[in-house]
Length: 406
Ligand code: ASP
Ligand code: MG
Image (cartoon, rainbow, N blue to C red; front, top):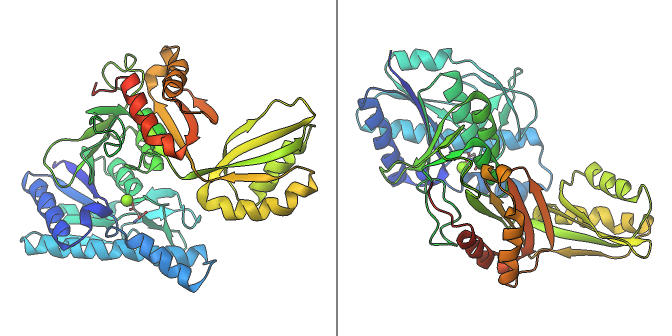
């Protein structure tokens, strides 16, 4: 039986006609090598954002169902164009929407979860020796509503298909060579990793690394689907995302991430008595505002400040929510700081090493960088610092923890 390979190409890999032809060539190469090839494609680079802007020109508050109907068109364009490009090289290929290949999801429009994939149709086409091209990021509910899987969701389509088809390989093609110790545009000494664990990749993706959608890594981990992240512009191998890597425990910090998407909100002069914080955060959550880090200062005066971070895009909603509410629970003013950055160090080795946080804080202090908030997980430590110090912090930490490819 022929081996199945799933190859996913992101928006930057199919940004224009030339790129689409390059992708077609790569796909055909694997077909010639004897694989059954299933290709998952994102919308042409920038298309999804443009569609969102378009909807914003019509209304501030589009229905989620219609948003899915709109956004799913981006991928429909790229699959058709890629099929044509493959045909022009003399190979057989057929494109499908998510619905056509039986990617069944729940009903949560704009962030749907895959419930099942019926692979009969794909297998039939593979058996007829065709290259199968599937629109990423989309599915359909049992009652025929088109859904999308959240931004970056083509990764999830690819991983789920790889699992369901028992593919021997799942390749994620992008515009960088693989996963780096940190963003090479900020630290030129950043190096590409040959391997990284699911846990580390998941943490890095959640903390700001842009390369892969976090949920797709969760699914890959759950079903043990090894992923190869690599560049569609080069032949070199990229980074393998796997369960365990060599010398796993020896490496304290595998990567450093930067997240510029958050803002800090400080509610000043909050009465220091039971129930106030609960009311504050209940109110925020009721209004759909996701709060991340929270810090409450020690109170000496029966009044205290509470700071927390939210997504920058949620700031208008937060302002609306707190304008009246802050007064109603008798707090002082609310201060918003949009010029913050979250710097995180990530590594499974942290579990078995001590002093990592101290080293991180020490390195920031030596560079005169003030830490405004701290949070930790089993395998990461994050600090909120001022945005203008972010790049300096990353370079300092990269040096301090001697990040290399191991
Ligand atoms: N086109 C979608 C997005 O931009 C899905 C993807 O790229 O994976 O989020
Ligand atoms: Mg993408």
